Length: 315
Image 1: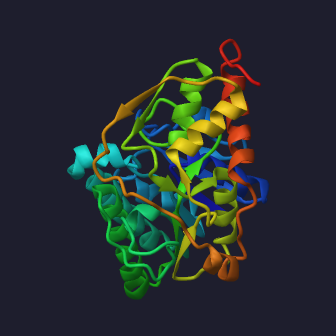
Image 2: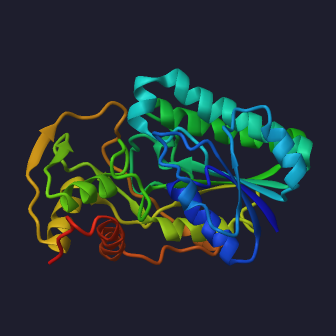
């Protein structure tokens, strides 16, 4: 199968590109290498093609027509809740206008299906946990709003143009290649600080919880969605919620360093709790998460320690 992965040089997208290549598919990565997005040319699999391009570029249609993919995995995005809250116009420009540009290119280029990186941020703070596909979507951040709007556009393009889709509403994805200097991804940010023996900042009271899902499990969900999940939206999480404070204490256990803590305020757009029920994904995608949080954090720490051997400390 021929597949384009937008954002395929980034953290999540590159692992998806890896999984597609390993499964024998022909992959083309399209990525802008935006400095705040974590995209790096070195993340692209050797056996994948690469085009340096923004998803808002009108030339996306030419790329789609030339490569003739059957599937486009759309993972290019402005992914930071903090950046989106500071600059909602930019967030919408990338996450909505960029999506529409890709969808138009898919329709004109004869693409059969789009796999879309949606988000648990579309739900906001739910009335009940765990969150499932029937939970009302009440996003509390511009980022969550644009991801919810994108799902509606996917439904429109399917009904109007016959372009199929599967949307995957991710929990908090973590793992190797996540940017430790960015504004999103507490696991990688904390690991980056722990490795350098620096302090960490814990916003709010640290008891806010998230459902942390390992990036290679997310890649497997994207592999499953190639053949399954027509016109479906799925919660991709573990069913376990973990506080920021618990992440901190787990890293103390993993690396044997007790990083100094600075308290910070609640971030704009942050929801209090999140926990996802992945049962629908298990039934319809035949996907279940395979990696528990402590094991995933150990693998992630080992990856970053290998990148910083001079400063890494392990217990």
